[in-house]
Image 1 (cartoon, rainbow, N blue to C red):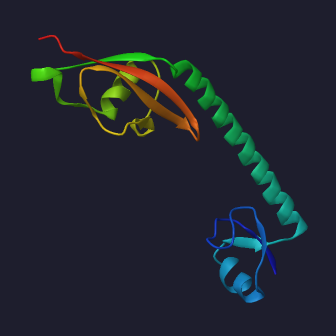
Image 2 (cartoon, rainbow, N blue to C red):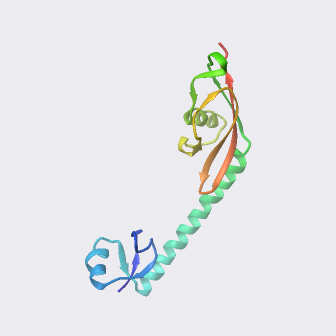
Image 3 (cartoon, rainbow, N blue to C red):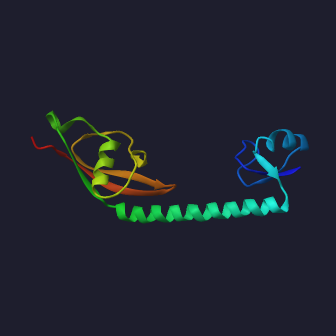
Length: 149
């Protein structure tokens, strides 16, 4: 029996794919659990419409991410922290600190979008990546300075 998958099914395919399975598997497992629907002409057209809508929506999101990347690229933020001996910070500059500074510049970024291998623990100028979408990144400069006492 030919069915169209409504969810990703490991070992069989992903949403919108038409696969051939045994009748019992389709009738007793896939269709009752709403994991698939029979592959009729009407259902195929319906799923194709859904896929084209998803593609358009994804393209809009990607375009917005590229536009934001252009605006963020090269942005320089200053973070002031108290320091101890040898220029070492008390604590560290974390993703939350960077997000707070970016939001002060008028951009809405989530801390999960900041890509850092480790927290910043010294004063200086650092380049940090911001992940905006799949394979769309912006590099910002983070200037860590001593806080005035």
